[in-house]
Image 1 (cartoon, helix red, strand yellow):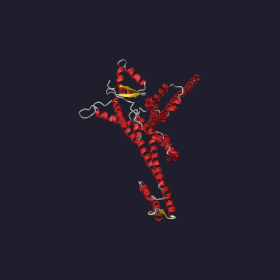
Image 2: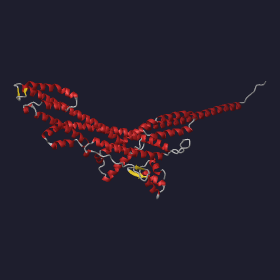
Image 3: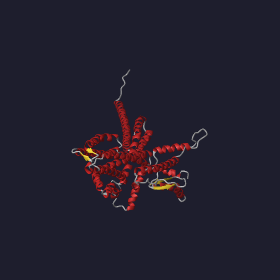
Image 4: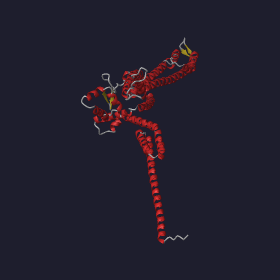
Length: 480
């Protein structure tokens, strides 16, 4: 076979063709790499965005911002719909992580609302400090500011869960305040008891009355009883002293026996027994009743025994006085706790969670049913809310009646006795529904009248602007 000869031109062409092929491969490789890098970058950006969303959700949960947390969860849910398959699981895990934070965030939100409501209570409690903090307001403007604070608190308590927690915390605050006042009163008595005894001995009624007045209306009855016990003890000791051997020469054993018998405690009688026996022994050995005379050393011994017995009676008497006052204070504290419970009911702005559950049960029981007993049409939230408001009014009526009974027992003196405040919240019109919005009572009749000249949308808009919740609006429009 003849040798195949290839010209230089053909070899050059073939060489150029191989180089172009390699260049094309390089360009394709580079383009693929750039595409991969873009894909990786876009994936990284999406994942970083998801991590940022999760971070914002965690921050919202930690601050108790439930709506903010739910918004981030919804953002992840939307991202999952369009995410590549390999990213979906990561996003689902992030969304599940945020979902797990919802209960804790809700609890924090409830605590935040309770804390805010209690902070408003603290501001409203000290009206002088509140007025000083708003020096440039007119009296009308200040009153409006106070009403606005109350309305803000009431709005915080729209959630029954907040109301329930608020009731517990508010009761603890009242209890702590009362205990502080009790300690302050006991300190007042301790510092002024010596002066009170001196005033009673001197017959200075003005100073005695000053002691009672200084205790304040809340403790006036307590102070009055203390005065009575101190006076009784002082009169007893004065009577014993006036009948003593030193004053009359003749001993009076029966007087001491009678005085000791007045102590109810057998332990007290046992304690005084030896001193009484010593006094009786000194009389038997030193006193001649027929002659009405003492032996030479008998009188001195009897006076000494009598003085010791009188001193012990005084000491035991003061101890018994303290015991009686302690018993009284224990009874009063029990009454105060019961009063707190009833006053807490009167302070309720909205039904508690327990009341709402009871209203739901009643509404279900009243619902229209089929022949088989199944509910034909479930009760609306507005109907349940209406029943809950009625239950709350009934609870308040019962609390008011019980509170007046407790006040009579707690404050025997009519002048110092408070009166259970009237219900200025919800009122009833002709069998319809009413509620308090921003401190003002709004009835269904008012809504009906407004609808005669305005559209439903306008009326609802005005109610929202005045601070009404959607639940209140639904209840006001139910049945119209």
